[in-house]
Length: 110
Ligand SMILES: [Zn+2]
Image (cartoon, rainbow, N blue to C red; front, side, top):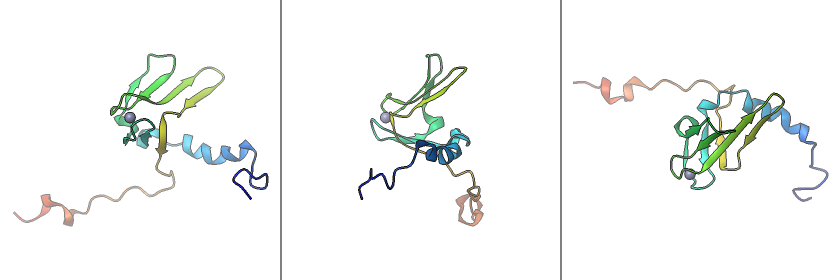
């Protein structure tokens, strides 16, 4: 049974549930890996050009386009062809633990 076997193939609607988790989260916490240079950075650490017909997110390492987003009254469009990987913390994941004061140099004896 190959990867495109009809036994394994689902209608595209099967992706809607998992993808709704992705697009329901705060993407400012996401990290993106540039499809051009391979650099990985928080989405907030990219350059954004919002004055184009689409919102354009560019890699600060190589200046190539990582992500484009456009919206009109009927559709939302996301082009991720310039991103090798987009990582978003799972919305159900516990918050990161605060730093352990015992391991901090700041709190060690004077
Ligand atoms: Zn890049």
